[in-house]
Image (cartoon, rainbow, N blue to C red; front, side, top):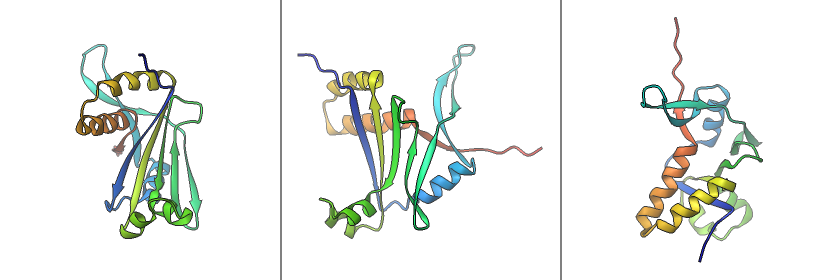
Length: 155
């Protein structure tokens, strides 16, 4: 049999890690952090990181930004960062018990479509353990959305 997925959603949950989504959003707005991708120089063959220009939007609720979208709706990949604890409590979700017990719960959810989803399908079929699956998720999210602090040079 042949399998080819047209859309794959990968998630990484951070429970009680103290991640502040509003702070991430503000740092993106203030250009204190950026999103970078790895590239290999054609001249030198060295690996480096290049800043990616990506759209992002945050949805303000009260004084917080509980959800950030990075990337356009039409692109092959899009990242949503959101307050999973808040979502579960507000919607009385299936993980409400877990949400109430933790201090904070932030989810990074990558949506991959088209050609990138086809490539991920091939990699998913090679996975033979939970550890390999976790590594695939982490590597995929970091490959597309590596957050790095911006260094400001003052002359």
